[in-house]
Amino acid sequence: MPHLQSRSLRVYADSLEYLDQTRLPQTETWVRCSSPDEWQTAVKSLAIRGAPLIGLSAAFVLAQYAAQHPGRENEWQRVSDRLRATRPTAVNLMYCLDAMEACFSQGPAALSERATALFEEDRELCLRMAKYGADLLAEGERVLTHCNTGALATAGVGTAIGALAVAKKRGLTLHVYVNETRPLLQGGRLTAWEMADLDIPYQLIADSMAASLMAAGKVDKVMVGADRICANGDFANKVGTYMLAVVANYHQVPFYVVAPYTTVDPACATGDDIPIEQRDAAEIRGATGAFGDIVWAPENAPVWNPSFDVTPASLVTGWVLDTGVFDKAAIARGEHCR
Ligand code: MRU
Image (tube, rainbow, N blue to C red; front, side, top):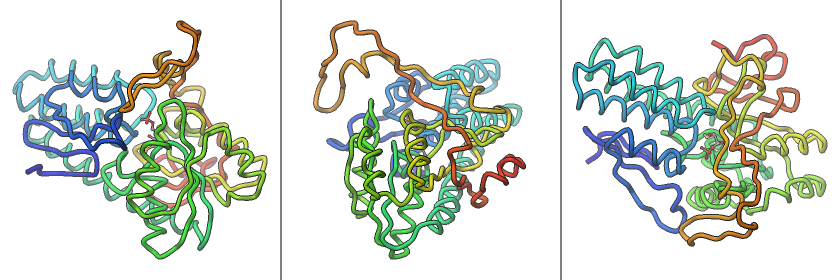
C-alpha cells in the first residue's frame, strides 16, 4: 500500500509509482520509479508532468536517495543539481529542491518528512486557489482552458481545472472548451480525459480555433495555469497561452491565471528572465503516442520548439493564487510575492 497517493503519484517507502501521462487516455499504466535516473527519464518524456507534480515527485526521489545513501551529503547535492536541471521553466521544481536542500543537515528522516509536507501542502493550496477561482465563475458560463492543470498535474484537485471542479461541485453547470495544446496534446489527451472524469460538459478544439470561437461570442472566460509567475506578473505557461491571451484581450474576454505561491518567483523581475525549455524537433515533425509514431514533415525539416511562452501581465485580468485573486494594481504593488 502506498503511504501517500494522488491521481498520478503513489509514494512508497523506497520508490514511487507514477501514472504514465504519455499513455493516457488510451491506457492507465502505473510505472515504478526507483532512482533519480528513472525520474529524469520520466520527466523528460512528460510521463510525469505539470509544474507542481514535477517538483513534488523530485522531492520524494531525493528523500529516498538520501535514505539509501546515508551520510553522503555531497552526493545528495549532486543528485539535487541533476534533478534541478531536468526541466528549466517550472519554478516549482526549484522551490521543492530548495526546501529539501535546506534539510540536508538534518538527515534522511527529516527529508522524508519535508517531502510529505510539500505534498500535503500542495493538496491544500490546490483547494484554496480552486475555491477562489470557482468564485469567479457563474452558472452557465463557457470557459476556455489550455494544456492540463488538473489532478494529473498536482497533488490535489489542480489549478485552473481545480476551479472548474469546485464550481461543478457547487452545482454550477459550465461548458468547457479544451484547447488540444499542440504539440504534445495535453489538452486533447489529458484535459479531455479529466473533464469526462469530472463529468463536466466540454468540447475539444484545435488551438487555432480559439480566436473564431471568441469572435462568435462563445467564450465567457479563459482560465489557465502557470509554470512561473514573475515579480511584475508576467508568467510562463504551456506554449500557446500567450496567443490565447492576445486573442482574449482583443475580444475583451476576461483572462485568469490560476497557480499556487510555489509557482511565484520573486527573483524573476520580468518574463524576459524566465528560462524557456526547448524540446526535440521530432515533436513538431510528427507525433509519438499510444497510437504509434507518425512523421508528417519532411525529414530533417528545421524546427523551433519552445515548450512554454510568456504572457505579459498587461494581458491578464486576474491572478488567482492560494491567498486570493490579485488584480493588476495588487500585482504592481508586489502583493503576490510573499
Ligand atoms: O510541459 P507540461 O505538460 O509539464 O506543461 C504543463 C503546463 O504548462 C501547465 O499549464 C502548468 O504546469 C500548470 S499545471 C498545474
